[in-house]
Image (cartoon, rainbow, N blue to C red):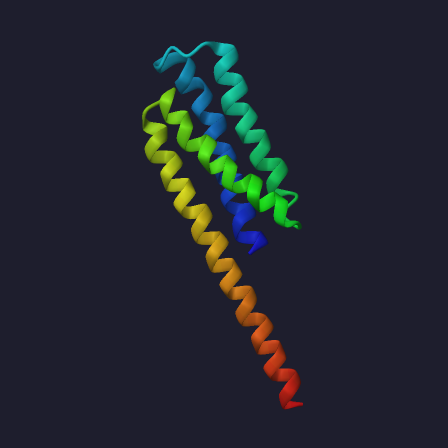
Length: 114
């Protein structure tokens, strides 16, 4: 689970960082505001991707998705991009949990068979 979620956050960090020039030049968002929001969320993605060992990091990951979607108020296309990354994040999260549960069940079955 950790690997898939970390990959999603890393890719999302790249997109969020690349949204800064779009906010500044296309949408005329104030430079400071664009840098704080875009690069702030991108940096948070990288930090959380590296700390996905505890359950609190996944909560922050969920909140990052809300922030990415909310960027749509600054750059309308980010509503779509944010929803897309939220779907990928939640897919990785739930699929990862399912894979880990299956691995634990298989290990338990293998231990019983010995």
